Length: 239
Ligand code: SF4
Image (tube, rainbow, N blue to C red; front, side):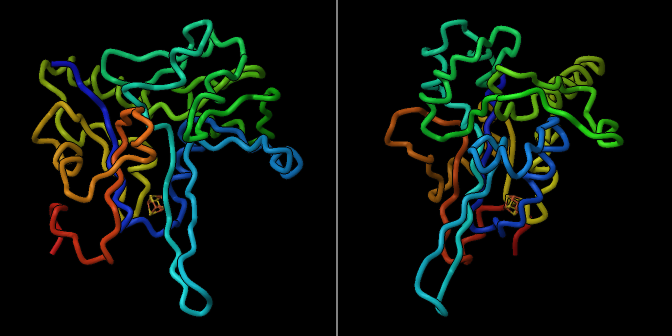
């Protein structure tokens, strides 16, 4: 059976530290556009952490919601692309073919999660920052849409290593940069077709919901709702 990659985000664990955001930028060569372009709404983030404030000062609670491409099974971005740059892979990823993209931005307009970004200019990495670019990830140029790939380069590297050793992929072998960096293990990535994977087990939790699930997009990202920080028994290793 092919893999079906998905992510589970435990909102009870997210502290809003944004280590995932920094890790994603470093791993995927996401450019920093600067203050002036950000003010024009041209900032690029493959993952962002939304903040919600509950209550009135001083009795205030802040909630955090990491948002990235939901890799929907019924992705609204795919049927609107005139060049099939946005398409579904056999293992369930919502892929973006950069050299097919002609920059109509129909996909970004169709996406209810606002996770697709358009390159308004060629990014520049001042020396010596060019040395930090990840050689496994292409640098996108002006006119191209981009977004989270679930670190597809890491998925492919793990698949090639497993094939070379003539064995199946193990659960936990593929870890996207955001999940690797998260200090509170709020992000769990895995194969949803494997009933024994941690991601699959958590996706079956009574706390699991979809972001804007009522739209029928069938995301492969599950959010575990907060329950006051007490309901932690569905995570292995918790006391
Ligand atoms: S690294 Fe983890 S805890 Fe920090 S903002 Fe991201 S998901 Fe939340």
